[in-house]
Figure 1 (tube, helix red, strand yellow):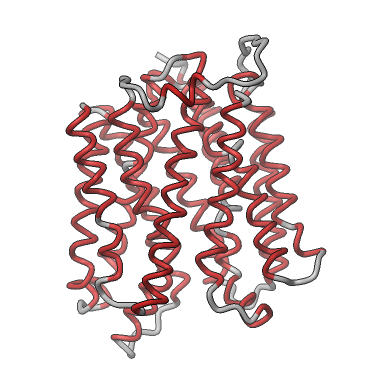
Figure 2 (cartoon, one colour):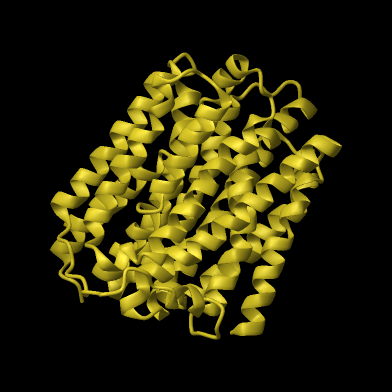
Length: 390
């Protein structure tokens, strides 16, 4: 067993660093209401999110092909990446307010987050193997809260200038990386003469022990980030159907996203008893059911609708750490960082397709109670692939 004192000292620091770093992710979405009047670009929501995803995809692919998470100490990769992500997050504050500048800043932020999220998972997989499901649940739960954090800041302080919000988030991210580097020792790395490593990329498409979890993760990713990106749209649509509801959209969005942390952490503890794969499968089923019930809940009372959002948020995110746990535990040690990074890369590629598809539907048909049925193929395909390949 791990020494309890080391777990008690190091695991909370890794979790905090993940929360702080990933708070950069949706910072652009949180300040979007202030940006749209300046830019006169009402259709910016999908591209604000997709530019981060595209940057993350590009970054994870490059990090993996260069084997950066496996060739260099993980804590140093995390620190360098989070500092760069925080700096480029502020880049457009010093340049003219234009859509292109903002999207470039968001793209670069996503690019350097490739050294934060998957590398954080590698640190957990290296340091806390006996309690990996629980530790991964805490870690991804921190990512979920970090993702929701800008919405909370905006919801509780709507008068806060967007420059102050971005600066606060960037400073928080850097502080987490510094604390992680000070607290968690860097593991020794294997020397490699090869600058490029393609075997990890090729191994994704071959039968392997981690393949069922990888395919389930892909189905989960079709749903998750699109749900997060369009939660304000769903909440505003509900409020249009119920004119008396005045609860702030940002606070509801924060609650629904942050509920994913409960799913992640609760799923992590449950995985210690029944296994990560079963937990992931059950939560994927629940989130699929939530998609099916969306039209019915649009007509429900605010209490039921809010409770529904919490259940959906918890289940949609809660399976993610358990998929990652299975991938990390079944991947080879020498390629673990690259495998985690690549699986994350292709998962996020699916999020871009899903986000743009929903955005196209909104433009073409408008917002309806049936809109989110477009997410249903994700859970269905993920469950089918897990069954066929297990």
